[in-house]
Image (cartoon, rainbow, N blue to C red; front, side, top):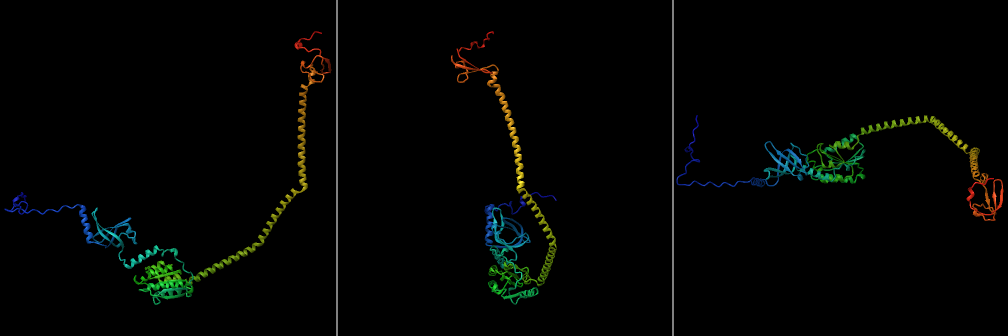
Length: 462
């Protein structure tokens, strides 16, 4: 079917209607001014905070938890998700260790983050779903006592190995005391149980339990009490609450007598159990912790008897063996001592021989003889050397002596006093002189003293 062309006359009551005759068309209402994103987000924030003023609790499933100092997570149910943030200071006070998927109750305020345009739940506290007022009080007291050192393992005492008397703080009509009595009678009937009847639930229960602990601790030596057991049977959290009171915690902390606590069933935990020196899950187990088992003691005694017998037998065998070894060892000892004595005597004899006078004189004489031989040899050597030096000197002296000179034809002239005349000028005419030849002397008088010019002249012919 072909499409019709557009005809303005067909459009009635619309943009193309002609104006009514004699009337002006109405003026349109002014449009509101547009909002900025900041103004819009601020309005949303104000509306939310005005409508949801104060603290709000939201229960839901924890999802997408990110711990970055601050906690960022979401709470969701079957159809919706709420974006949440928890500041670092608030997160530090949370006792839980939440994980994705946990059902929790978050307390905080709802607001709208203007810069990001996001509605968020600002959480200030968080707890597991189902925690009531008692649980919160329990956790708060536990945190406080832990910081004060009430739960420190170092302060806990050891239980006595063989208690003579145990004070049991409980209801005298409850099932717990019957369990304790039955277990103690089965394990070791000689252990005495001193039952202190107190209320274990209700308004006065905490005060009675605390007072019983304090009095028993003060009178422990006088009453012969070696340990204190505080116990009761199972019940609800409200029924067991007396053992979570601070007055009971302080009495247990101050107690110097070993203290065992067994409150409720195995899954229950109370403050006094955390402070006590030993926590037991049931009254029966508490009695087993305190009262030694007779069968085990008999077994230990038998084991110790066998060990002692074995030790005594072994010592007897060793003694017999030592006695049998005595003669042989004595002979070996005496032989060893004799050998050492002989060696010592031989050493002393050698030293004595070395110190006898005859031997010393012989050694001294031998040394003197050797020294004499060496002295004679040295003297002979020195005399021969001196003789050779004298002969050599005599030969040299003879070669240069006066007689040798005279023998070669020279003469020596002396004056009247016997002084050698070394020059002609030493004499005067008329002096009497003596001329010494090799074979004699010639006396003469000086007639004249002349020069030595003709001394080298040839002698006159004969």
